[in-house]
Length: 369
Image 1 (cartoon, rainbow, N blue to C red):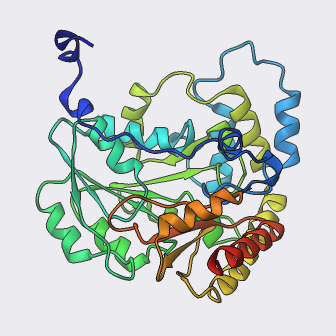
Image 2: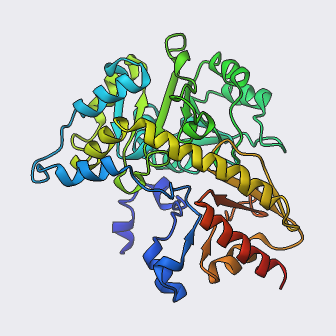
C-alpha cells in the first residue's frame, strides 16, 4: 500500500491488535495430520451435543432461503418474549451476542470515550471499543477473579460510559454476585451484563440472571446467546434485553437483515424444545463436576470452580502454552491465552463423557513424559 492510501485508514484501526479467533476444526485437523473424528475439541465452549433435532428439522423444513429474512425478527422476538417474560419492544436479536456488543459500543462511544474492562474476561469488549476509537480503563480482577469494586467506582469517576461484565465470567467461570451487580448499577454508567453462560449456572429452570432488575435500573442491558446452551454457535444468533430508550436507538443502526432465515428458524424451534435442551444442559453441568474432580487429581493443574461450561486451570511447574501444544499434537484442543494475566492457565470446555475420558488419558500421557 502506498503512503497516500495508508493515510485513508483510521489510525486507531491501524494500531489495533486483531482479535484471535479459534482455528476451524477442519483446518486444524489438516494441520495436525489427524482425521477430524479423532479431534477432541474443547477449546471454544461449544455445546458437544449440537442443536436440538427440532432445530435441524426447522432448518430443513424452511423453504424461504431465497428471500431476505424478517428484519424485525418477529417470530423469534415473540418467542423470546415468552421465554424471558420481557416485552417484545425490549428485545433485539443479533448475529450472535458479539454483534450486539458491537452495536452498543458504536451507539455510545465517540473517539476518546472510555469503557471499563475487568480482565481476565471476554476479549470482544476491549476489541470492539478499540474499533470505535474508544479508550479502555482496565480494572483487573482480584486474585480469586472477583471484581475490584472500589477500583471500578474510581474508574467510573474518570468519565467511563459503560462497563461490560460476563456472568458467569469467561474464562474464569465465577458467577457475578448480586450484591456486586447492585453496587455497580448505582454508578452513572451503562452496565452491560453478558449472560452467555447463564443457563449453565441455572440448569434446572429458565434463566433468571439479572433480568428481574431491568424494571428498576434503566442503565442495565442483558445479552444472551443461543451458541452455548442451544448448540447454535455456527448459526450466529443471540439477543439482548434493552431499556426502551436504548433499543429505540439501536434499531436505527442495526443492519436490516442481520439474523439469517436459518438462524431465526432454528432459534424459534429451540425455544419450543426447552425441556430437551435443559436435559442437555444438565448433562453438561454433571460432566463439569466430574471433570473438575478429575482435573483436581492432575498434579500439574489447579482447576477453578465454574458455573459455566468450561473450567479454567492454573498450570503448575510447567509452561501452560507448551502443555496446550502437547495436547494439540495428540488431537486434544484446549484454550491458552497469550496475555499476562492468563499466560500460566489453560481453559478446558466441558465435552461429553467420552471426550472427558480422552482428555484425561492424553493428559496422563503428557504429564508423565
